[in-house]
Amino acid sequence: MISLRHALLVAFLGLPLSAYAQDTQNVPPTTTTKIPDATLYSGATAKVVDLSKYFTDPDTTGVCLTTVLGRIDIALYDQATPITAANFLKYVDNGRYVKVDPTTGDRAPVFFHRSVPGFVIQSGGYLATVSPTNSPEVKPTKVQAYASIKNEPGISNTRGTVAMAKLGDMPDSATSEWFINLSDNGGSPNNLDTQNGGFTVFGRVFGNGMDVADAIAALPTFNFGGAFSALPARNFSISDSLTVTNLVTIPNIARIPALIFTATSDHPGIVSAAISGSKLLVKPKGLGTATITVTGTDVDGAAVSQSFSVTTNDYPVHLANISTRVVVGTQDDVLIGGFIVRGTGAKRVAIRALGPSLASSGIHNFLSDPKLELHDSKGHVIASNDNWQSAANEQDVIDVGLAPKKPNEAVILTTLPSGDGGSAYTAVVSGANGSSGIGLVEVYDIDSGPGSSVLNISTRGNVEQSDDVMIGGFIVSGDGSQNVLVRAIGPSLGDQGIDDALSDPTLTLYDGDGNQIAFNDNWRSSPNANAIRASTIAPSNPKESAVLMNLAPGNYTAIVRGAGNATGTALVEAYALQDSATSP
Image (cartoon, rainbow, N blue to C red; front, side):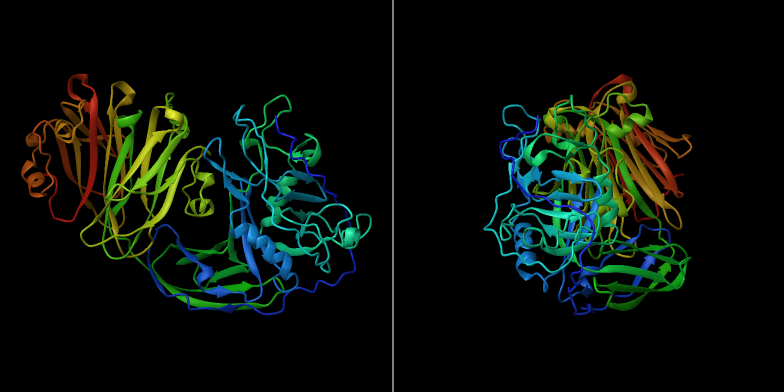
């Protein structure tokens, strides 16, 4: 159960309001540079614009708390409470609120350790570490504190404000702990504006953050004594062992613009505009041009606006996303997915590793906890993720509509360098703690305008029998048709040191309605073998399979099996070709 060794004796607080003046900031926000005009493709994923690059508030710093229940944005009162605001940012910038657990090697963030509905929720005091002798039970570690700071009272503890906690009868004792006021707590009966010298309000929740704060306050609380006498917990019964997953942790704390943004489109049927925190989501819908106007408003109500135009064109035909489902083993038998991006400019992609959500498709032996790594062409790990909600850009994953159904599935959302010659990347899916099972790797092209493209995916894994074959999926999207070459590689993997290569792969291609539209065993027997050879990427072994077809927009599935029920390691690949080769 939760450790009580570091129980902190903190004097706590209360309810209604004070007559203190809300003397906070007074410098209006400004625009730093113009948002550039854009050309997008109709029906594409929303373009994400980071408004922090284009707006600033000179006298207020923003901080985003990414909790497991959602996002809480806070505007710090830099000028009114300079000592306290700087103290809070010191903990944020120096990583005192998120450490590495020495027992598990995972991130150990702070958590909300106290909740009193209608009053406050409190955090900043303890890291969500586990017991080294009885993992995964929680044994919190006290946040390493800097020296206490001078009290700066004067702003009232009204609902939505953020204030420092401190020791009883010690006005200048605040260090790392802070709380969010759920009600107007400045005056009687709690008198937070005068009690113990007054509790220093140093910021305010803005945007939709109080919805998250109220959700935290609505959780049941449990008495573990001391500082944890009102601990909010998720999915927990007092008869259970308390684990990190039960806590309301804050896996990521980062600076953001301290502005509330709004956006409008003069032609929402062509381009819609929506705000997610400090991000603008521009969704191309129909053909034409629209003007988007964005306004940033600071905590004092001062505002600044700017506009830009967005032109929407037809989306050229392309592979929108590509995926492979296969049995994921251990060591050399993990799922290895390679893909290439080519063209001008960087490419924004999302890579997902799914396992538990496959149960909804009738898969019982799914990979229970997939882990995902992304490697560059030199084999260097450039990104990794285990549970997608622990990612620093979790909200971005939600905004692009690719949040997995299960919390222990993995996502990497990133922008990758590209070039005219093509840039190669590899995604490796494995099971946490050496687990195995059926997993799915997906690569999504989520750019919304001209630039580079995802050309192919080639996934290596185990081909077994029955439902444990290799299944590759891809989507042809856009205006027109796409030449696609699908390959099933086996014997030639032996030249790469693969001992159990699938000796004779077969390839079957289905459309989105489940109709078989092509089959091949040995590629040289294909009716368009000459076109496959002319593509310059024909399989190197005659027992390997290939299908080359000109495909209309839609969903397609490629299934790789072993001829004669053979099993072994195979590779399935889908290439978007630029030449004029078509099926007969």
